[in-house]
Image (tube, rainbow, N blue to C red; front, top):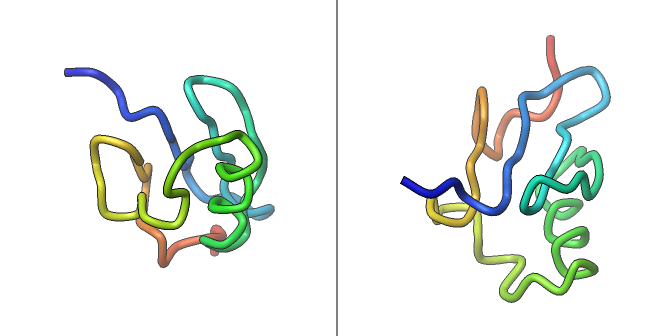
Amino acid sequence: MPRAPVIVHPPCSGGRRVTLHGQDIGRARRPGDIAAYLRRAGFPAADLIWDDAGVCEWREGGPDIWFTR
């Protein structure tokens, strides 16, 4: 099964690392940050990826988890 092109890595004290096709594109502190990074990278429909597991893989928590406790 192919990997999703967008990976939102596990939360840490500084937010969540985001990669696109294996390239680090930033550290997000909220969903809007991910959308902004993806738009800058030329990714179409950056605001519509949250529920598409074929496009976005959330590791150790979904879009409601941003920092470790």
